[in-house]
Length: 292
Image (cartoon, rainbow, N blue to C red; front, side, top):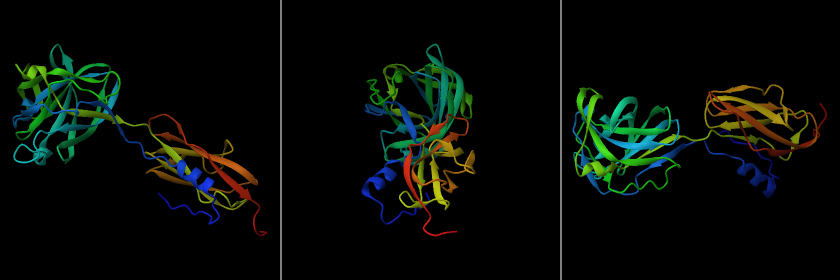
């Protein structure tokens, strides 16, 4: 973020106003959480398509962007230090078994007893789905005996029952079977995430001593790429309309045309998403200190 030039005479009120309108970048939002407990461990084979799968209920269509998987051991051959060969696969439901492959997530990193996976997997509608652990080594994951989904979005939950691939190749199973007692009463310990709401904020180089006709740089900070339009007292600022944000900041060289108190804000249209409007900040505009 660019540093803002601020008058030394800033009052506490205006400083709090300026800081209060800085929004953090959009973050992934947890929609399903079953990592509240760990009953025992489950060992998987090193053949990817044979990996175990666990059922969950989706409450709506959504794109999954991240997942975390809990291990029951953190050292040795079954620890997450070897998890870089792992993938997660999401399957539709076919009776009591996985049906059609929906998408995959790839290994990203691990910390403590959790492995992090990222990707873009589109869940097409509400219903039952399966999460399968594809592993290139023998893993040892947490399973839970009680379906504790505290912290999940309403309608999202895990279901008891574990299946495993019985035929296939590479990372794709062609058939599944339910695992027998006692694992058919359990599920894995994992969480699923979707992209959080996009955000935008605005900052002014000077909020108390801006001068009519002189540039006061306005800066929009966004959570992703898209286009921004700057406003002064609800009117679009010339030269600052529909500007491309390639990264997460874009500046507007604003020359105030009138004196007095002005409210400035910015509208942000994320690529392929819905329009977002920032909170307004107040700017006091004075006459120029010297003639042209």
